[in-house]
Length: 247
Length: 383
Image 1: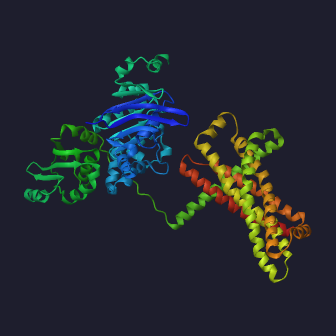
Image 2: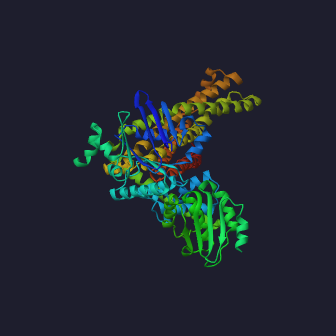
Image 3: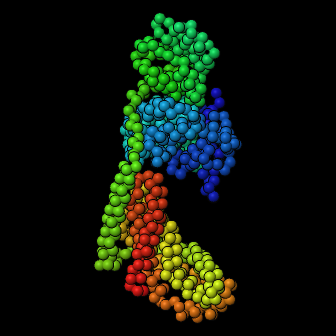
């Protein structure tokens, strides 16, 4: 099976600032991958480039076998229907209720009858660990943890093959963060989808990630399982894994 | 019966039905995914019929592809047909599909009674609208009260005025607004003079164009036009700036630092606008009359020297002041409305847009109402 995400020699420059100096890696299907790196190492920029929101200065990105930056608008739209994205702050549409937020991708991209959309929305809510009554709330009435869950439910609405999560546990308390992690793990396992997660959270990495990709100095520092990464001798990686002891 | 069911579904790419003494077996095939739901749904709605308390076996042995929406489709149709969960048995599910069916089975939500949104009649709507409008009036009054209190404090202790913020605001609402205010009043001056020149030429009263254009610009047109520009430009900006700060928790941050949003945000903006408006109106007066002067020269042959000479005779300082006195009052109203709408924003992006629109509408309406009041007052006072 070909890799679902292929990044080849990505370079990104904003003015004189060089964010990526040639990043290359690939991600196999069905895995939960965590992308880590210090603040300003270009993790979120890379995520935006992968999902086709920001054009890299040079390099090639293939998603599900399709070149993101050589696709026509129509191809890109179809490709986007096969991925789900959870943005850092949820990015729920503030004028729609929670139920309408989750139904939005279904209503816009499919022509499924309304009663089935309702049933699917109910399933998505339950899968994300939310009560059915949440559907009628407005996003402004939700707590941080609930917002992330609703955003997850919306990201899952179209049955994506890859799920991108941008800092899914930031702003959550440790208990909710672990619950969210195990939810993502369960969904990843039972739906067989690939999860690509940008994160800072050491606990998420140690508890749920199959593979870790470390970005630093604009380059790929390391890629591999938790044990392999721990074995890498790099100042930032050493600091990262010992930060727990310091605190 | 079984034969009929089989015959019905022979050519069906999605499933076959097999009825036996044990119950009804639905043998799925093909791809039961979100993308195909539209094709599958009408077929199964038409063809699936269940007997009461019949056992139903969902056989996945021939199924190629499955996702949660596909499982949900089956569950939804069964539920709508009144089949209870105890009647349903999943059998021969392929290993790669079993986690998906399990996930859905565990998350089959008890459907929540969804309240149908209430539709209000005309009378109810009018009532709700009135109550909301009254509540808004009350809020505005309360805000005016708060603002007045802050101003009282400032009169007692003028050092409470935040000089830096006020100057920054003054630059934005005054200096930056000069080009657009001048352009618009210049064009209005030209239009008024042009239209009047046609009339005055007919009666041979050419020189009266000076009276008409000067009085119209100074007393009415320049104050109103400038007020409308300022309402659209600065009033809406106040709402948007303060509203965005509120969405970003900056207002709370100010208060937690022991600063009063009234003093830091509202007073500098009010002050800046109250100073800016008369200045802008004066610019409007001058530029508008200049526009009229050009037209008078081009259309009626009145030279600028004659024009200015006539202007000296027919435009008393009083008329100029009538226009300039209105300006700070308009400014105070626009600033108060703009700031109040910004501070009372709700925590969502829609509210920001609605409030900004509402600021412009409220400001323009109140400016026009105030102008009418001024007109009556000045006439009664014989000015």
